[in-house]
Length: 232
Image 1 (tube, rainbow, N blue to C red):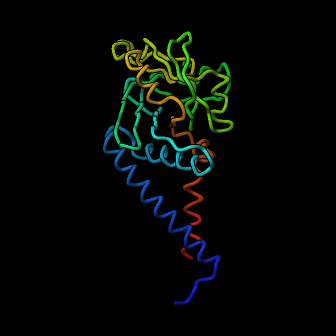
Image 2: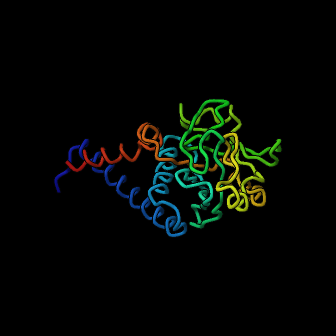
């Protein structure tokens, strides 16, 4: 059997590994999409691609993933928390966006302190603390220029009385935060305990600039390029 030149063999191996990773990722995406039929499968796919990319770049792997789809109105549950190891949906909840991000529909996002806007992209959860909003979970923004001021801005997951279906029915939207992804007070503590200490949170909106420049959404494009080179 003729041995392939080393550089061709390496590219072929990379393409094969990429294909296996893609197949595994597609299988997980399909499983999570079945668990969350009201979620956009593309958003779930982007969230998984971002976490996979982060791991490839040296971030520790995560057992749990929270996905927020800010393209949905605030009156709809648009936060999903998945257990990736057991492939279970743990939470499907309402979640607030920032006062200056929009009314019922979100439209504006920022990384700027005092903007009162939500931030997009991939976050890593840190520890918990008791603050003015009660039991809260710190978020570390992993994307430079997009959400890396999250700690400075005190963007945290916390419970809020204004995240309430009754308020949504009364005023056509739930209440808004200072930029934090606030949740119902009744589930805040168990949800936070599920996500604390090194899990991923992925916040989505179809923002063209972010989708094009996010460092955690580029790995799939790089893999596709590598696979293309390897198939030549």
